[in-house]
Image 1 (spheres, rainbow, N blue to C red):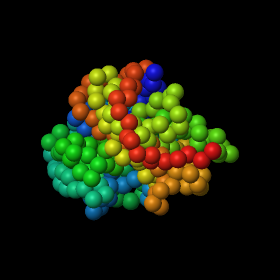
Image 2 (image 1 turned 45 degrees about the vertical axis):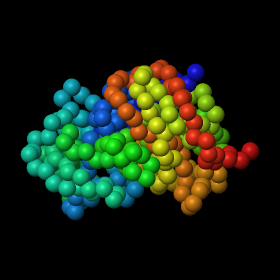
Image 3 (image 1 turned 180 degrees about the horizontal axis):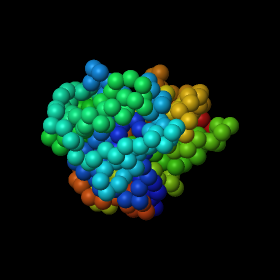
Image 4 (image 1 turned 135 degrees about the horizontal axis):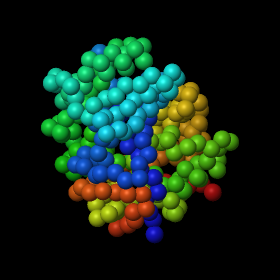
Amino acid sequence: MLKVSEIYIYPIKSLGGISLQQAEVTDRGFKYDRRWMLVDANNHFLTQREFPAMALLKVGLTHNGLLVTYTKDQANILIPFEPLKQEFFEVTIWDDTCTAQAVSDEADKWFTGILGFKCRLVYMPDETKRHTDINYTSGKEITSFADAYPFMLIGQASLDELNGRLNQPLPINRFRPNMVFPGALPFDEDIMDEFVINNIPFNGVKLCARCVITTIDQTDAFKRKEPLKTLSTYRSKNNKIYFGQNAVHSGTGIIKVGDELKIITRHTEERFIIPS
């Protein structure tokens, strides 16, 4: 029997994640997951890809909002769950454009001071419906400010197999999953089609193409060559490197660590052959 062993949310896109024992599944993913995002002066999304120092901004949940701490000097700011401004404008994430809400002048000033360039913190209001890619989903599903889909699923065995090839093992936070499960074969998540967790149906829709964020140490923001160097030798297809699977869902509810992950159907095609 497969079970959920770890749950993570990333309230502010591309900042530090939060490990939870349980999380609420909403219409667009886990509650609070990537509902906030930093944008530049052109309202374009910001990530660790271009600004590795964002890794040093860690996020915690409090009763009153998000507590963001800059680990370099322990400076912090409390971001209320409800934005303080009634200002709405369009922002871009990859090829998508959607309506976001400004959070506060204080937040903009704080993040600008930390990162060293003008930026703004925005929130995705409930009224904004950002749809998933119709090339891989029905297009009816929605997501937050995540790259494209509401959930990222990774098997612990996949990480263990990778770490067996590396000189220095890497933690799961390099891959920013929402859910981790042990007990399967390496990369078994690749072929999961329909699966259910606590009566919530999911569909694995697309393998996740990995970027340079996986090479950024989340403790010091330094870029290194791994794991992309090693993954490229056996997880590469069409000039992209894959690790983990994106998933969509239908329904809402609560998922807890220890909940059973029940596979209903598997994809029939052979997506990868792992070399011996």
